Image (cartoon, rainbow, N blue to C red; front, side, top):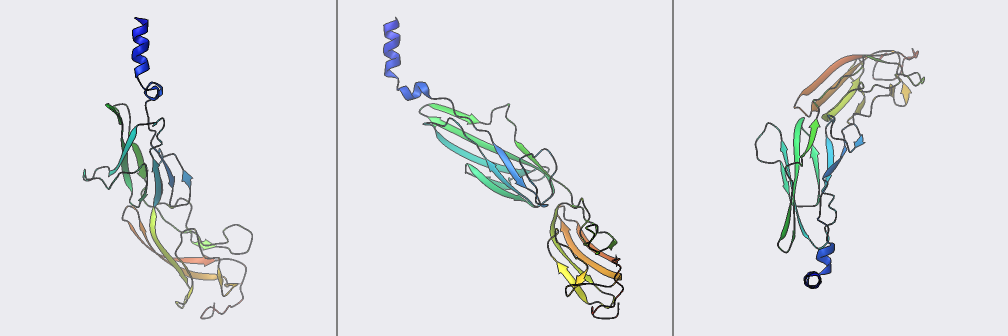
Length: 234
């Protein structure tokens, strides 16, 4: 009997005996709208979020592999936002909400077929936060490292379009910017403006579709009372 078993095993190619079943471990890495990089999708993230998803296959060996990715936005049409056949994919999330990312994989070797996912496998869930944006009422550009610059308040999130400008009381534009992490340093033509009231105009759009039209007075307090050339008497 042992001789028969040995003969049967000898007839099977060695590679098939040694072959380990292939697996996948789908994962994502994310760069958020405020520049943070993370591989943790359990917390809500600020849009736009640039995501990279990978199947992370292992022990594929002689199996042929087929990968299929689908992305859905929860609560919307069952038609996926993305349907792609690659081992790795990139996607940018520009709208707030909850997203389901599912990898389907099939490994085939002869008559052996191994599918993914199984019943216990769960999709990747990505949550994009609702938008938030506000600015302070005053700055003190005196070089002490505190409140020297007009910036969006901490906690801004999911802003996908942005532009801002500062004007003096005569309507002359002193500075403008289009990146949220930029801001006004209280200067015009390289010199700190005189103390007084200036005007901030912001037009922005959130990932949730909310539009921001901020118009507010900004008080500059620097100890500089000299009248500067800013398009009128300050």
